[in-house]
Length: 220
Image (tube, rainbow, N blue to C red; front, top):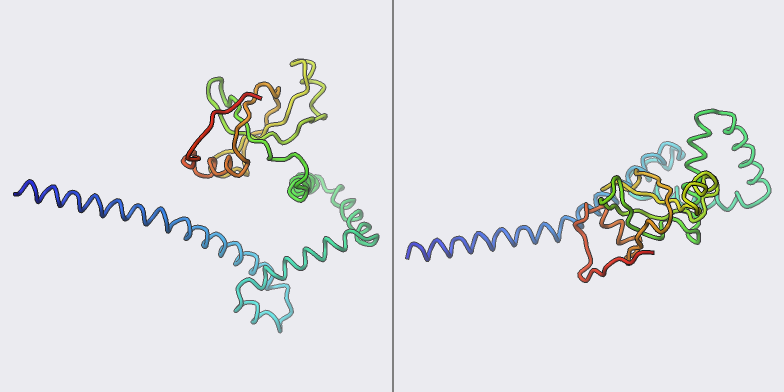
């Protein structure tokens, strides 16, 4: 009888533990998502509030998201103004001034290139997930082909490898905003039969996330 009670007690605690873990797995992603969205909205609001007229600041502070909405409208108007003659003139003069500032021009130039890629979804950028041997042979990492013809480095590398290399960005988990830029022959990459979003999910989750029916990669 005692052994039967112990078995029932063990099953109960196992059920309790499994139920708790299932609840955490279901609720935690929602909590993290809401927290990240709220943090982002609050950050934008706090940057916009100080530049609003004094009469509008109390309303903006008590209405979450107003600052974000104002920022979106302002960015849209700036983008529209940049398309006319006067806007292009201001942009050209601003970039001319920045070009004379040694450190600032490097930061601005890099940021501009990144956001131009984001604003141009028709260009080949982070659209082809691949596997590459990195950092050593026999160790594979997920990367993304970002440039098919990096002409600025093609000549010296092509002489050595006999073909134009491709640019592959290998992000670090779990924050893909930092990583390594590699130039290599395309034949040394293995195309992955998953989307860019699915590849990024694996990076964010340290490889925990996977599809229910994975298919084998094919060498490109």
